[in-house]
Image (cartoon, rainbow, N blue to C red; front, top):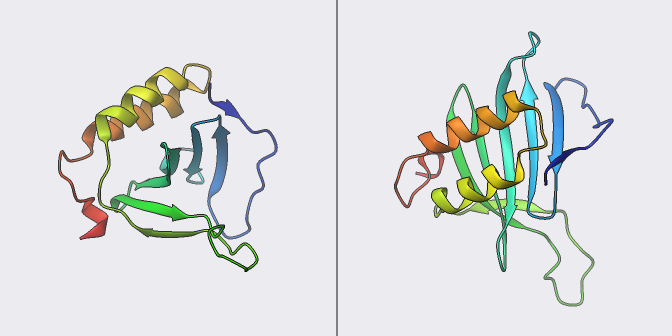
Amino acid sequence: MLQEIPKTRQIEGEPFRRWFADERFDLIVWYSTDRSIIGYQLCYRDDTDEHALTWLKASGFSHRQVDSGENRSSRHKMTPILLPDGIFSKNQILERFERNCIAINPEVAQTVIKTLKMYPDTLQSPGDN
């Protein structure tokens, strides 16, 4: 079950954020100065990879694969980076999220569910074209 991480680090010059996590998901939610949700990043793990779906109220969706920086033979771990990844299994992720979000703030859960349902039923993420 997703749980809020208390005392999430705030970054000067960036919107206020809250962070929720469990074994499958990391959810970072950004707020405007009036405390309305302006975006989120839902990171999720499948059998082999990690992905990040970002939704911003101003610009819509972006879907990326997370390169953890760990698969570098004979090198130190690098900083994780986001790479293009157009395939997003909307229904599968939505179903998992709905099961895992029951313990978090209802406004946050409903915003994520509502926007996930709006994700286009295409193979390409709109922000990746």
